[in-house]
Length: 142
Image (cartoon, rainbow, N blue to C red):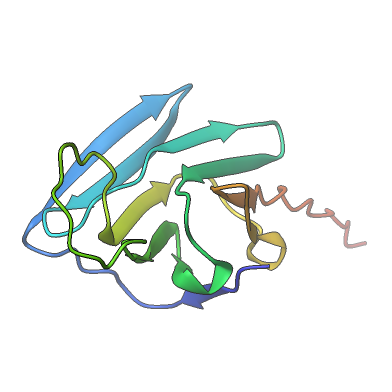
């Protein structure tokens, strides 16, 4: 299980970042991409009771990830090291290494006590259960 850090306070984006907005089925997601780091392929989907974030990033260990949730902003970051340290001539290089980061804003209320993250078979899966509406009883004074 990957630990998830909950932070309070406001989040300030780097001046060297680009924010993208995706709106689907009335729910908006904001992605922030920093120019100095790479962003792994990410799927975000919603079920009736949760938001699921699936990040494809092979060659990692659970301890290599930093997953945090600050109010409605999910941040995932880490460093993927190159597996080969030997001197070599590169003919093609498409696999990114080094620092990576992904930030997204979730616009639905999340049940913070039930958020989970797990890394298996090259995929980091973060499940963000939706907070259920609280029912308020109305009493009559008499």
